Image (spheres, rainbow, N blue to C red):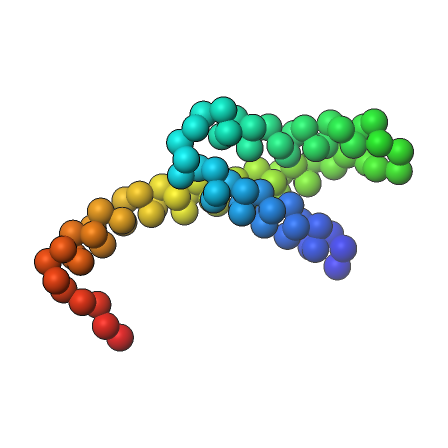
Length: 93
């Protein structure tokens, strides 16, 4: 159970951080987000009682990739939604 919680933690934290950073289109922030999973595992070499784990970094990068895909999908969908709303069409359930 701890493995699943740990994997979910790494994935979700980096997903949320990436969702906030990718729309800004600032390359320095994007580069920092891309470096976070690797840097956190490298820092764990120097912390007593901590062991670096490749899978933690993997799940972090998976969260970043999922956030990037979501942001890209929104960039494709947003103009269409805006165009529909400009025509006065309403999408109702």
